[in-house]
Length: 461
Image (cartoon, rainbow, N blue to C red):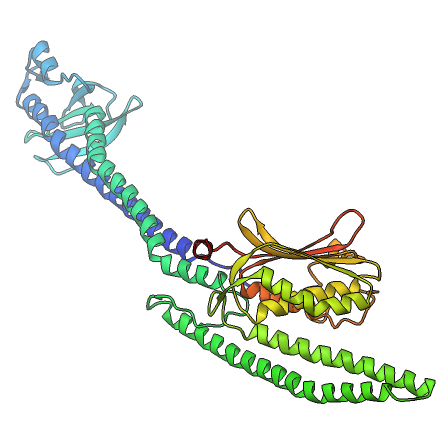
């Protein structure tokens, strides 16, 4: 059983095929009708002129002792059947169907009533001809025929006069249809752009002027977004509440374990308490990171409720917070800070810097170094953290920003949430997160570039 999804169809293509095929069918129908009218008009115009010599010849047929003959001088007879464009022939037959005068190899006419005339098409010596046949009261049959050059030329002129404007109008109609269909589908293109430009977690309702035809789709999609927003809000609320509720008992447990470790204890009991204390510290850090992640995810969409913030001041504040831990781990924590002013969230940006520094300190061995840089590169504000740790392979750099992902064999006790929080904050600010090596010896450089804001630059200047 084939479960392959159906191939997508194009509304533009279907509309254009329908409109263009309709126009082509109309042109073909017009061509058929015009050709029929042109042939009838050409025959009406030239049949009468073809019948006149037949009457003249019939009036000048005499019957005497020698039999019937055309009583006209040769020159007069030639003048009757002369034409500058077409070849004209004539034939006179007796009532007994014998040839009296004219060409002998012209076939007799079809049967028709006496004392009447008839027009018909035939072939004579490989050429198509139009024949006018006349029967006199005495039973004589006079046929006068001519080739179709004048008629065909007249038919061509009529077709050109009728079809050329029609074809031009059809081409203009196709161009207008192409343009009109494109204009008519602009709301769908606007809707498509609105959806594609949305951030993955932007669940606001679509605010587009949708035509009546797609308004139900937009309404249904907004309903789906509302359900997703409610479910996401419940999930974030649960995560934040759970993390918040865990912080207090974990902090209390950590404090009690630290107090116990200060007492005189046996080596075995001290080792067990130390392991419990380490597990409590890790659980407390995980709760804090979960709370930070929930806060980052529930922050307003990009560009809302932002303040003008200097990344240098945030990094400078982080220096005082992390200097003691870096000194305890024998890691040289350095700062090269220049002014980098951006519109940002005053709560999320410090969380981002703390996670970057914490992540670098965790994976940098003793004797290594961690350097925090801020500044502007060609007017683009940035913040970067470099370390001399083992580095992140190129194949893993797109995965380490996922939640709870840790590379196989990675030392340390990280939870896999630090860079996920950083990515959330960067996305909220419309920035770019880059992970690469410091140099050929290894290490990791994580750089966050923020979009330029002319108004902020002008205000700062």
